[in-house]
Image 1: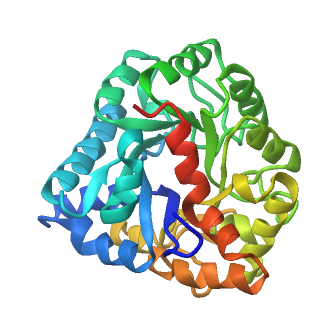
Image 2 (image 1 turned 180 degrees about the horizontal axis):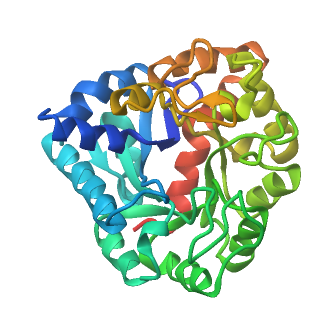
Length: 331
């Protein structure tokens, strides 16, 4: 990408796979294309990280649920090879030119139980990003709702990730888990897919300045999350989200900041979970004028209005996350 060309967005987090599974079960033949392609293209999204997620409190066979979402991911790409592609490092630049690149992630490994062998299976299924927890405590690590960090089993899991071509996602992790992972992993193999700045809004999902700095010094990128839950429930505006961007840039520099949308409105309404409330905030709530990926141009314009140069906007929008993935241990 160049500063004079179109600005491409690389989005660090979406839960769209849950909607795909639901739509397929309802009989839709190609929900990724019908529900998401236009949104992603209108928003300039060149790369989307797609998270496999299962509520750790849910009953039933967790591993089976993860596999179902992985299957939907692969089937969707196979149906639409001319517009979607599974991203590998060697194909990253080309994907950004002619197709929407998709990176498969797992958001929380509670469903693994204590089975490390599942890591190998999901590596074969093209999972390239592993988040250790979704706020909870599990056999591998502590989430942001719990004290403590990596367990001995978690240390074994983290040690194996680089050799499998995977990176660690530190979103939802406890402060000690963040510190433990950064101390244990090679430089450039950990990032944050969706969070914001605790100095701007004090929420347990947000990162302190110390954490921002640690991730950046480790070679990672912090993808900021424009959801009212972590931006500021009392000021649900794009401008307030830009306050988080400005703070992160002031702490770690423009080259370590990215975007992690976590746009849940459409997904939550499809799944019938739109009335679910977390910390007093509706899960399907959005910032004004930023309901989904198609509105990314409004965010980029807000960054320009704050005085960011074309090159800086390009870096925040996608250049930084694309660079991280291009130099991380993706195969």
